[in-house]
Length: 272
Image (tube, rainbow, N blue to C red; front, side):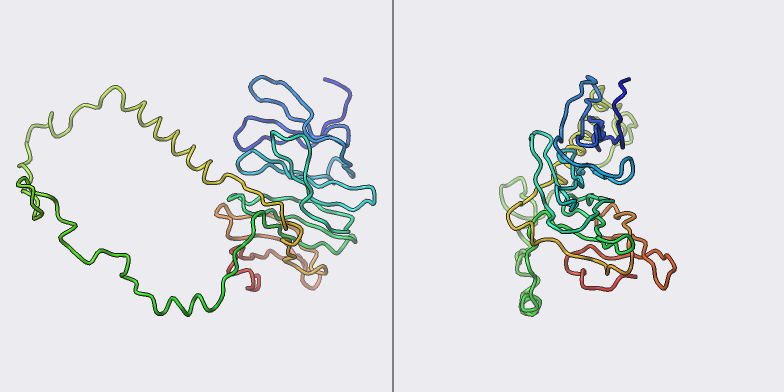
């Protein structure tokens, strides 16, 4: 209801927060339950609003990544945890534009556009954790490994213990009864609640599985450019399994859709 300009409202993946840019220099958060608002990111420079500046939530709703300009008008990517009061810079480029941010669904990397001139945008990727290198020697060593070494060689271990305390064939099961009341017993009153708890625990497990971890040490060197400047490439989407990037690029003056693998061992492959 105030006269203050607010831009780009976004809801966190867990639906707990509503975020928006305010005053061309801040990102505010509003709790979706209590409606309480607070300043989150402050002291930044957001230009070309409402469309130029950009930010995105992490898949676990614990981080916000945003593009901000410095005093030299270089635009870079910063991240800030939901419980922290200051952001951390994760890209260190001397370009005048950065935006179109996409955080991978698995939380492992951030994709964005960066460029210095109007028609020379590139797609860049920042890996939030170090990627362990894979060597050809490792594939060679696998040729001499026994695929069955982890399997049990004694079939007797799979047999059930009989009533005499010895290992052998399990006793025959009791004959099935024809009583439908026994075959299909009525569901217990608490089964629906148990199913709801199982569903909730499964959702909690998925959230923990996609918990974002950022290793800031050495992150300056964990940026790679995925396209050439003359392609004028623009990020469109990341597949839900985080293994494929879809983007638009100009070829001979004609815009086309392209796909590129985001798997670490396939980043050397050409886009299609």
